[in-house]
Image (cartoon, rainbow, N blue to C red; front, top):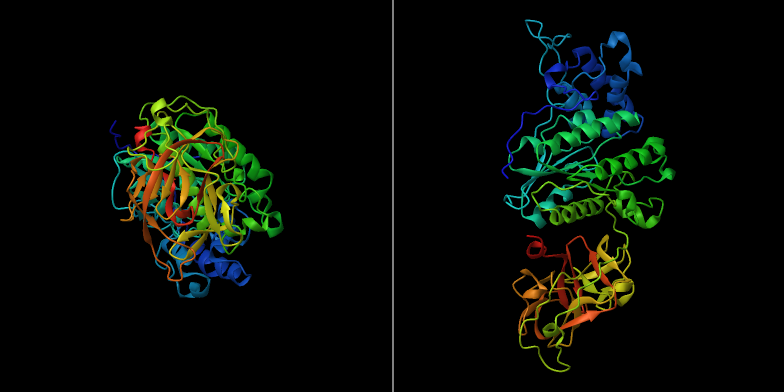
Length: 522
């Protein structure tokens, strides 16, 4: 059904709605002490601009430290002025060049004593980043709100919104802002305000949100606001930090674990709410493992673009699997994980699909009844930079595999990882050059025109995109399909994810990391 726009009411702790106009801007004296006193001091102490900002904002909001002294004139919760916002933009090296708030009344009230609308929020312009130029009628527009975990201008470099927009062919608006606590996150433009939007991706809870009950209350209110307007919500969890990095205890300690457990329970108890729990990722969930380092940015804490890829892939899987517009019943949630999963028992192939010629070609396009796995058979091979040609069943996270055109990329996740799956329905495809591999009918494969189509659409004679790791002149070529057979594979099922979204199977054939789910879900 068409979603109507709603009157926006930000959520507060109580959770009585808190309108932006109920906040006063910080006074001139407070803004200048923040910008030209607190921020430079902490920059000189070696903090980044983001860390200095968080520290100084914390002094104001928590009522602790030099900015809390009465003569400074800072009021906890006061809104940031233009100067305070520009301090972040100026950065540690140029902060002395920021303009002051001279001429702004200390009491920040209008001529009639009315409260002044703050620079909302924090002097920033929304939308922050936008990916995609089309709007999908199936998925609608998608909004991302949160803090630096998802901030499109931050450490993930916009990968989250760009990948979602690319795969779902829709528009993704990212209004996440680094350093924002949940109270501020609840005030940015979100899905519930946009008639074209169907999905909200939310994170938050560790920026000056140090009271667990307060965090859970605020997140619950935010989620309920979105769901009440007919939107669906994905909660994105934080990856763990390694204690050896010397980070604050609440980031990766008891507070962190309790907060995520509460978020999992929140999603489990509400319809149309899902949780992506990064603690379940085999590497991000093990942050002291050196192999997990590529998932974190230079500061060894914030997510890297590689982690952003994982966030995007998990959101895509949830969105594509939950297209029904009808109200969904509450579910007992198993947090999204990239660990090995099992597959449901396959339906036996119909008699006509079991007919396989021992030699020669299958003259008609194979069809399969029911829904099979969405991946490749474990005996299909890839070329590893570290170990040479290996079966998919041996590929490990972090291992670099050949993706075509002379390039290798690391496997950062698995869409499917089912070593124990048996009787999996597959298409065994052979080409004129002798390449052989087994692929599910819904898995995408590239044709000679670089179009990704479901394997079910292939026929004998179809021409596939190819690339040989042995080639001295990296390029893409073409191979012709010689035969297609329906088989039941007992070699397990696998679908590795690479940053480019593709890899080469069987030595020469370029396949996608993704699947075509439209036919089976709509």
